[in-house]
Each structure stands twice: as C-alpha cells, then as structure tokens.
Image 1 (cartoon, one colour):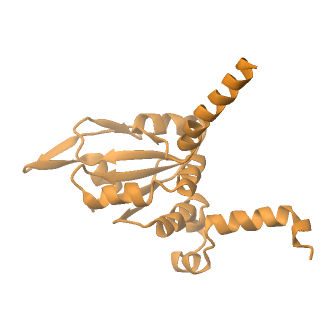
Image 2 (cartoon, one colour; image 1 turned 90 degrees about the vertical axis):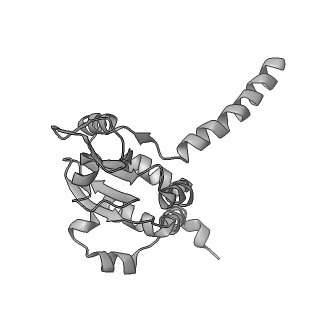
Length: 191
C-alpha cells in the first residue's frame, strides 16, 4: 500500500516537468542542429538576438513561450538561439565564421551572412534542410504572426503560395487541430 502511494506521488511530481519540457522550444547549438540535420533532415529556425535587445526579450516571453508554438517548432525544426555578438567562432555549412569588433560592440559574421547583411534585432531566419537560407525576417513577431510564418516555411508553402494568399487563407493551428479531431469523431456531429 505504501509503495502504491509513493508511486502515485512520484508520477504527479514528475509529470509537470515532462509537460513543461514539451511546452518549451528545445534550443540547440549550431553544431547540434547541423548534426541532427544529417541524422534526420529538418529545417533550422534561428532566433538572432543580443543581450541588450528589449524586443528580443519580449519575443522570448510573448511568442516563444506559447506551448503550441514550442510543440510545432520541436516537431518540425531544429531551433538555434544565436547571440549576434557572441565571440566564439562557428563552423556552419563548411565555413568558419568569426566575431568582428566594431566600435564598442561588434557582430558575428554568421549573423551578418544569414541576415543577408541586414543586421537588426530580433531577426528570425528560416534555413532549409540543405543549410541554405530561405528567409530572414527582422523585427518582433507576436504569436499569431509567428505561427503563420513558421507554418508557411515548415509546410513548404513558400515554394508555391505567395505570402499574402497564405496569410489571407491561414487557419490557426489550434483551429485546424480541433477540426481534425472533430472529423476523426463524426459521431459527435449527430443531433
């Protein structure tokens, strides 16, 4: 009896930790993302930030903390959180990128390269399975705006559908999942 009680208590104590992990984006290093892409090809999502950027911190809290966004990102991308002012060199796609000192601060060559020379913070970057930049997008994005973007590139809609068309016809993930569940249980539709 005591063992059963102890086992039940342990399950309740552990389950919030598991649920919390599923509800947060699993950020990786550049090296980890590239290795994972070799094992199981996926797109890479990059959040380019700096320590002093207020909008970067706001996007972390307002957008990246949403459970449905974290779940989609973890299932469809390898996510990299990249400080554009970090000083360590990074090897990416066969090339070494370094920190460049400029005035009191500086920037990382890789941040400059994947933003196509348009450094601003935050910037999100979508990279395909062959490690080629699909699109850098500067500025803060709220949860709905970001959800549209991550699914647009995640579902490869950028290859066939213009952004304004996708945006106009977009159905939020939570609505589309609810509709799929409803279709899976047609008896629920009976009067």
